[in-house]
Picture 1 (cartoon, rainbow, N blue to C red):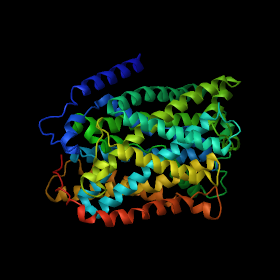
Picture 2: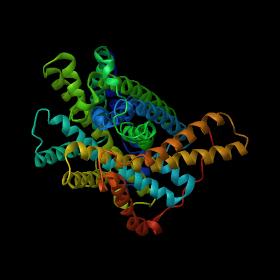
Picture 3: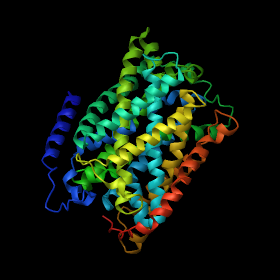
Picture 4: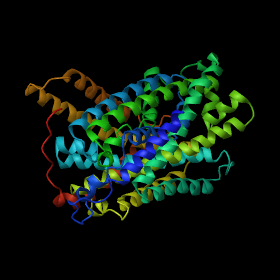
Length: 488
C-alpha cells in the first residue's frame, strides 16, 4: 500500500540521515549552524514532502468550515482563490529556493534583497506567525479533543489541554531532528487519509440545497469572498516550511522545489474537495455553531457518533503532526537570523541533539502566553478565528517581501539578458504579492463588533512592536548580507 511505502521511505531517509550526522572536519566546536549544518541534513525528499503536507494540514482545515460558515457557501469561492494564491506562493518559494537554498526561507530572501532592516522585519514577523500559528493550531486541536474530554468546554480545562498540545511536540523536537521527521511522516499519512475520505466518500452525501443561500454574511459578495480568503490563508500556511528548514534537507537545490510543489498540490486537491463535501453535507447555520465540523459531517453520513469519533481521533493526530512540524520552524527561523546577528546569539546555540533548544522553548512559551491571554475573554472558536487572522497578517508580510525580492531580482536578470522563464516567474511573483496584500486587507474579524473587529490587527501590531527593542539591541551585531546569487 502507498502509505506503507511512504513510511518505509521515511525510515530509509532517517537511517541514511544517521550516517550523515557525524560532525565533519570543519566542525569548529562552536555548535554554530555552519559548524554542523552539513552534518544535520537528515531530510530526504519523502520527509520534505511530509513536512510540507504535515505543516499545511494541521487542524486549520478541520475547523475552517465553522470559521467560514459566517459567510456561507460563498466562502468556497474564497477558498478557490486562496488555493490559487497558495499555489502561486509555492511556485514562488520553489523558484527562490533554487536561487538561494538558505536556512530561513522568506527571511533569507528579504535580507539578501533589501538588507538587514527589512530582513529583521521579515524574520520577526515570520517568527510571530510560527508561534502564534502554533497557538491557533493547538486551540483548534483541543476543539476535537473535547469531543471526548471536557465536553462542557470548561475554559480552565481547555487552556490546560491546549498547553499539553503545545508542549508535547516541543519535547519531540528537543529529542532531535530524526525523531521529529519520522513522527512527521506517520502523522501526515493519517491526516491525509482523513481528508481524502471526506473528499471522496463525502461527496456522495452532498445535499445541493445546503449551498443556498450562498452569502449569509450581510455583506456584499466581494467583501464576503475577501473575508473568507483571509481566514482561508491560515489553512495554507506552511508552503514555505521546507525552504525555511533548508539546512536540514539533503540535495536542497533539487528536493526543496519538488517537495514544495508536490506537497502543496496534493494538499490543495483534498482541501477543496473535502470543503465542498462538508458545506454540502451540513447547512451553514449548523456549521456556525459546530466545534468539530468534520466530525459532525462524518456523523451525518453514517448516523450515530462512532464515525465522528474516528474522525476526531484523526484530527487530533493531525494536529499533533502539524504542531510537531511548526515547532521546528519556530526554532529554525530565529536560528538563521541569529547566525546573521539579527536576533540574540542564544537562538543559534545547539543542544547535544543538534537542536536550537532555546528557540523551541521560547516559541512555545510565547504561544502559551498567547493562548492564555486570548482565552481570558473568549471561547475556543472565537480564539481560534482571532489567532488565525493575526497569523495571516504576520505571514503576509514576509510573503510580500519574498515576492518583491523575486520581482527585483528577475528584473535585474533581464537587464543582464538572463530572461529564460522571465514571464512565468514575474506572473507568479506579482500574483503572490497581490494575494499577500489582499490577505492583510481582509483580516478584520467581521464576526465581531467594536474592538474585536480589529483585534487581529491590534494583536499583530503589538507583537511586531515588541521587536523594536530587539532590533535596536542587535543593530551593532548584524552581519552585512551576502551578494545576490546568480539566477538559475
